[in-house]
Length: 97
Length: 197
Image 1 (cartoon, rainbow over the protein chains, first blue to last red):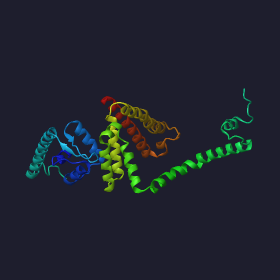
Image 2: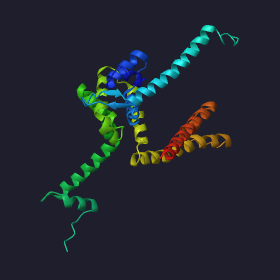
Image 3: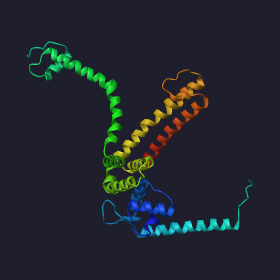
Image 4: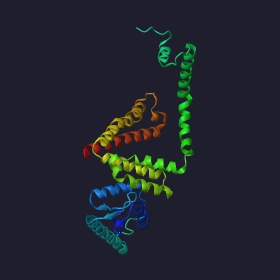
């Protein structure tokens, strides 16, 4: 979710929280958010940009963008398969109520 | 050799700090007052102080309370982490509090994340955490968990301070089971930390 949010441009912690809330309806607590940001930064998937130290913006690195692309492609396949099967009615109503 | 001053050991001890020219009666009165003050403190004083703490907290201006809370929350994290992310986390906490999201949920979230960072940090922080976990897990497993179950099964009528022993039937098993599970979870956390080290 953080990588998806940063794909829209650099953001600081509070802006990330607001953005994720808007597109995923998930509220990340400050501890969870900064725990994830520090891990992603250590793995080189995001980087801190120069600027206001209190509200330092983070941006996606090339490695982060690549990983996001791979993950989203997998998720898209899962969504497509699930929706396709639901549309075909496969497995619906197999288990008696 | 200096002449020994008359009086009991307590009076002699106080005399060493007594004011020059102070009479024995006055010194004795000071000892009695000190003893009375001690009795008052240990019987009434500290419970009143504990009651006063939240009142004092509420009497502080809102901005001051917010600043204190943010500082306390930040202290869950290890020093190294705070040096890198502390300022940003403080800004986010202040924004969240100003936004009305500063409930218990936020505090628990920060505490959990802070402890996780401490556990992940190599060195003293992790060692202290492992030591704390290894020294507390048995306190939950044995006295409030296994002992009441053994007593119940063996028909021993001793309740002592074992919470579960005061509960009837299923509640006893549930409480004791929960205590054992909690203690085992602490032990498992310690083992996981040691394995990761």
